[in-house]
Image (cartoon, rainbow, N blue to C red; front, side):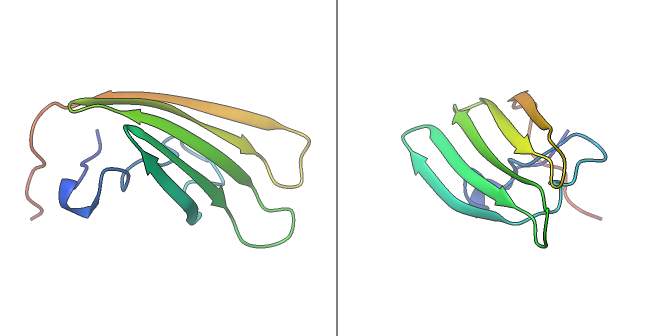
Length: 94
């Protein structure tokens, strides 16, 4: 589970969720929100770095989308599909 802070904007928590993924901590660029669709690019720093593009459909209590990634320095692409639903408010940090 992830906590989406609604005050920070609707797309702040959409990111690569799979473990051991080179895009997990890379910066997001070119974010656009049109209606309920969020699109953005992810680009890591350095030569042969991984990059990707994402598109998510946001609803009031759920989201669905994908992040298509080109792994840096390799002739390989990967797509992560995500779905999520609201299960309640975020728990306060201790």
